[in-house]
Length: 301
Image 1 (cartoon, rainbow, N blue to C red):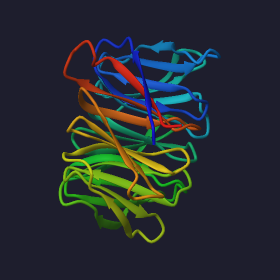
Image 2: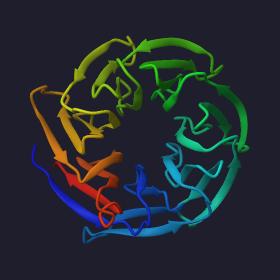
Image 3: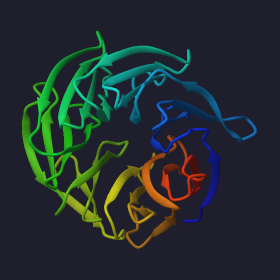
C-alpha cells in the first residue's frame, strides 16, 4: 500500500469529534464548537466546505446518515437533543429532546429507527416516522458504541466489560452476549456486505467476527494502546483502526502480513472511509492547537 495525505483546515473552532461519509460522497464533520460542516470534492478535485449547520448548544459527539435518504443526517449532542438535518436545505428538520447528554448514535438500515446513547448508559430508540422516543433501555454497565447489523435484524452494543451485547431489533431484548476483548470494548463496525463485524478495545486489539456464526475469525494486534475507532473500507479489503498512541493502522483483510501505520500529532477521535474509494478521512485532538482543527484525507488507491 502507498498513501498520500491531504490536510485541510476544517474551520471548526474546537476539536472534531465525528466524521461520516454518505453514499453521495459528502463528508460531514461534527465538532465541540457545536457546529456541523459538510464537505465535497469539486470537479477540480479540491475538497471544500459546502454548508455549516448551527443550532445545537452543546458539543456534537457523533453523526450518522440515513441509508434510505442520503440527504438526512442525525447528530448526537451533549445539549440533550438529537438533531435531524437535511443537507439540501442547510436547516434543521427536527430536534428530539432526550434524557441526557448524548455521546453515540446509529440509524437503522430500514431508516425507521435511530438509537442514541447518553453518558448515563441509557439507550433511547427514536421512531423517525414521528420523531418520538418509543423505548429506552437503562444499562448498569458502560455502553459505548451501538449499531444494527446490515440486515437490521440485530442490534449490537459494545460495553465496558469487554463484551458485545446483541439485542433483537424488534423487542430490543438481549439474545446473545459475546466476550470480545480482555478490557473495555470501545468501537464497532460492520462491513458493507454484512458478513463481518470488527470491534476495537482498550487492550489494543481489533477483533474480526463472522456475523452469522458469531465466531471470532482473527485479531489484529499491531497497535499499542486503546483502539478508539475502527472502520471497514467500502469494498471490505482493508480495515482502519485508530489508537490513543497517535497511530492509525491500515490492515489488509486478504493478506495478514500487509499493514501500514499512519502517525498522527495527537489522539484520534474519528475515522471513516469514502463510499467508493480507498480514501480515509481522519481527525482528532492533536497536541498543537493550530492542528487540532484539521481533517486529513489519506488516499490508498
